[in-house]
Image 1 (tube, one colour):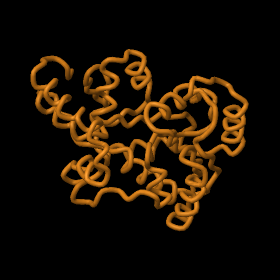
Image 2: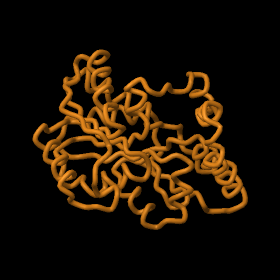
Image 3: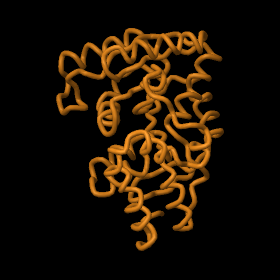
Length: 251
């Protein structure tokens, strides 16, 4: 599969449809696939952080979650096919799991969020086997504490329950750090860092209306809901200006 490098982050040039087909086929095997879903903000953070870039590039499937990445790649003449969000990919994984009786483990969120998410998943997707869940407040490699007792217990719990799919919602970059640090010792087939998806599944957060999603304006919807995000959103025009005035940042 072709990759497009944006500020050194290698993004798979794919579509949601092709991604779903890839995941459905991969889940029939026995190897673990690490999925990372960088948006424009994450790519800008990785631009000046070699360790973060290398970590993201160790992902087995790195998809373009941010609309800025789509526009930036087009401006530089190396267009990504479409935006493939972590949220959409996660929901498609649930559909695949439901249709095939796969099992799911949820890791992350505040105490009670993962539990509520699993209850809602079970109601909507009765074909999914809930392997287990654990909140995101524990000492672990995502906090620079490798092999803590808490982390070891979580890894052992996951491996004992042997899920097909793991959702890790610890927020960027903690979820990517945790996956990268622990992937080699986890029994699963797909693990995805999907940020706030768990809160959406728990019913605590509503995703942007479909019209905002189609127009690539989820960032605007979130900004209107929470104006304090303005400082974070300033990275978007900075990214676009950098792409416009610098050659070869997209390869």
